[in-house]
Image 1: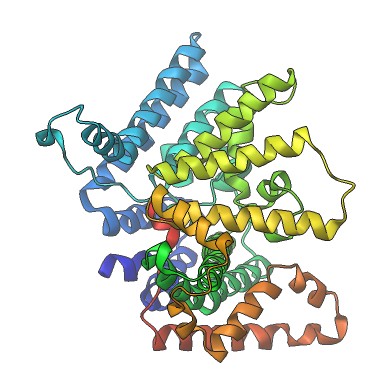
Image 2: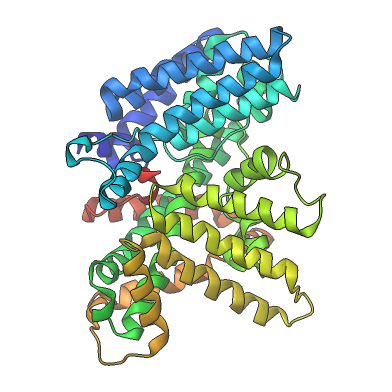
Length: 461
């Protein structure tokens, strides 16, 4: 519990003790010591959560540093790149997928029950492994230089705001900032605002609708009525967006407070009109990573249609598996890949925009059932319930639909759209901005004090 209170950005301990202490230490130190200080803080942050597994994390950093050097300085670059990527993926595959593989082998009686063992999943391994791999590939491609300074490379991989849940940062995007970054009052204030917006997303919206989605998915799908099933999956659709985008906003905001500029990770994905466009707006750092390091190397869209569809299937299969060692995630990824292929086969850009948007929402909302259900059987039963129009089943989730939660649902739907940009353009109310952020922060903290329910979906990735 101490770990959760310490490393969860939306906890009172993190907001009022850890973050202010780190900011204070950072700005009191001379420039030459700032990177080392942030590295120590980040390693301590990881140690609190993982204890001895911090050794694995440090080993991963050292391996990437070593193979970055070998790739940059030796003639057999491709061999060293292949070995470096293999070692990175070996760590990820073992710690993330060993339990899944053993469970399936046991299910089919292919191994003895005595073979079963529990492998602990290190937090953030999916994120820091991908950052290490992208660094090695970029050095190989001459997109960036080998970082001789171990402290700077270690900070790139371990920087605590994006260590747990991203966004996935490319080394070439912040290499100059690791060497020389200019902190300014404007950047610091914008970071505070970004952090407050992310915190509000997480605490005010995600946490409230999470109660309804949790109750819906805790029941067997066959017990739910169709309206209750729709309420549950709509609640989860809102929850996962505000949970994850909220954490990304907090990470980006904290980055700005320390002088870093990270790219945006979400761009109002529910406003998309196709699954293809959705993935340009959802978890942008992940979709960009797979585009640059998997899809394009496979040939991208340059070859004939069969190769393009093969590439898309591979990318979305891997996207699903990246999210977790579970058949549900694999099917979820392929589900999205299937619709992207359908959009290429049967383009319907001339269809009315509202119809395109309804199509996207239905596809994405239904796909979230696969993402959140216990297993494939539960997923199939839940999706069936959505479309059989059963009005006689359980309505339990509606008990938690109070007037306040209805208001939160409405807020969640409204702010899925770029409403803030519209409000910012209204000069007559621009003076309200500082006041609104102060009030929003006070209200968010009051919500945290009153409720201990503070789940975080992306800890399992």
